[in-house]
Length: 410
Image (cartoon, rainbow, N blue to C red):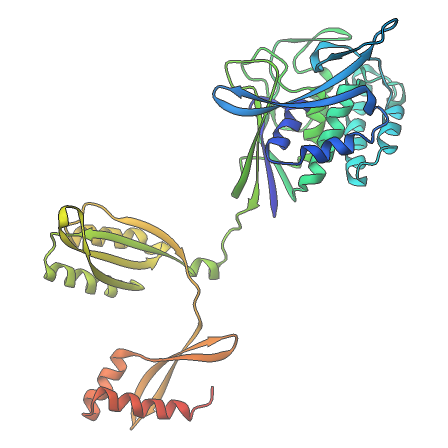
């Protein structure tokens, strides 16, 4: 399962949302191509630039709007925050989206996001949604912010989107209606039932556009889930605060909770280089480990620093027995430290059978691959006992046992 985790400690806005997605490695050229199919594409261009925030490399997403001034042949380019635009109603915005050639999924996403904003604005101002004029949201840069976010989310196609609680900010924000408290009324209306908090930053951290994107795409607000992170994205805001003003996203795959079988196939290797234990100590330790249920224990000669000869002790055990075997190694050797490595292992399906060889019971381990017997191994203690009782050599006994096995049906 593909997971997108949104870390909204510094709030969410349209530009930060898009920049974080692009920072994950999504295709900017594909985004630009799809935006060019909007009927208003001759009125804007997008610019993505790198920006350092507290030493961290982030991306900044800018929508540059082209203003044609009356009586002039030149076009003045202004970035997001430096201009005001004419108002647009929801019906006009929907027509712009529907007439484009972006994917059907992206169209649906964008229309639904605008409806979320429209419904919130209508409720706050006490009017019908048809009469809502979107002010900043209806401006070209905000249309591009929302449509871009929906195109990029359709590119990413996460199976699950999780977010931290949303930081909103504090203080006041200038709007077409005058100075309003942060969070803006539309923002808090959109984020109804969404975990959020004000924080100590005296600024608007989450805008109506950012709130609507979160409301639409995120269904799960929680801590970062157990996942294997493949990419991290940082989307920069415009202002600088005492905390880093960026939106952070993690893209990866779900790390599934292990089944009982999978847990059984995970083992731990405990290793220690030992150069000052006696052979008697190591022999005692080896036998002790096996008595306590170690999967295997082995010792190999090694050469340590300063050309000192030593022994590499390796104990294989289950995860649940890790602490028990670590304690025994410390108590019964001279080592000061143990290396711990986790391994997954693949094993054949096993079966223990008892067969009679010259009237004596002998245990044999059988290994199957896809239901086919491919390995046979006699249990050592069982063979040792049989050899002593029959008073024959080890090789003679194995030859007899193999003849019996060859005649058996499995």
